[in-house]
Image (cartoon, rainbow, N blue to C red; front, side, top):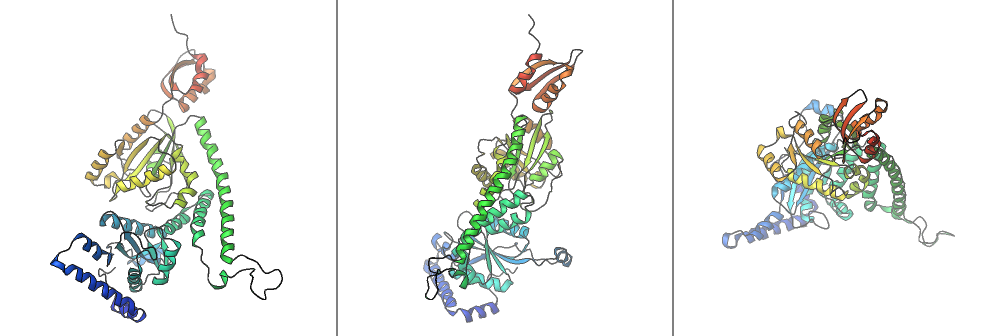
Length: 498
């Protein structure tokens, strides 16, 4: 990636031949900006903003172009070559660069080769081309110079913005939402996961269908010479496509509802057995699956990639005091998670809403962990899990800046720093989970005959055994249990002595 922000001379000559008026407009813009800076030899805030809007600013360090031949051979497939574009409307320049760096990571996960990244300072995205017509022309030069075949915009573009920007840059344009949907489509493994992704993709594509030439003509039109039974409003090809997509979406929603019923039955069974549940939620690539493996030895896929986990994994675990509970690994969240995905994955995300405790995992080594926390909590609100107790687990503590760790531990009242890789802080986390899980409400002492050993086993799985002693008459059990099991144990409670 070159450090210069101006296009090559060849690109300039090609652009001048195709669009002399655009060059004149740019020259006038530069002259106007220079004139505004010469007044009194000072720069006030408004003029500084104006100068920033007059330039696309390159973001260094985003290129992932391969140099090692063995790595090229390993990947085998030709990767799409992409240029990233962001619009900086609020926050600091560092915030804008962090957002574009995350877009670069998403693009890599989808299998693209990032060649360049540019940011434009604007009050709000341009309604027609996202970055404005002048800057779209400059972006076309950068695309020509780098040899890119795709432009990825760091935001959700309207159908009109996509069409107009494509018409200018002459290569494929996609937005952040389409990129995330593509990653989900690659990683979905289960039948339900694939159905949820397909539904979200159809919801996204429906308003963005395009038709050219004959595809827009009527199947049955009212033109002259059409013949008998061919007059009427008819239906265009694009209308037919939209109707078919709506029918597929309705079918997909019914299938997902049927699958949701199966998972709900399993959850009811766990609730019936009074087994507490813990959900691991957090930003994508924060280390949720690594933490699940460390706590349970589950052997779930761990990969240094965004959205490696799409299908929820539920495992049994045990607290240090011997209490059983379930631990669910859920899909990762990300800033500006497309609302289509939140809707499609709502049934999967209900694992979070139905849990007794949320382990909110955040990457302590990330440049902006507070933003990750805010993004995840926004989705937790969307799925109605705001009343579930939460422990903030600051993962990757061994790689994090100590000052960042201290800041997070001070801001988040119920938090703990751990490392799923090294095991640091895991014992303390298990003790904290034991403390926070809801405890059975009834404390009981019973002398259970050996012929009713199942009641003792239930006390171990469904309650919390305080003490257990084997006597000639039976098992003397002291435990905290729920009301249903307390009723079953009541006949064996020794009568109070006078």
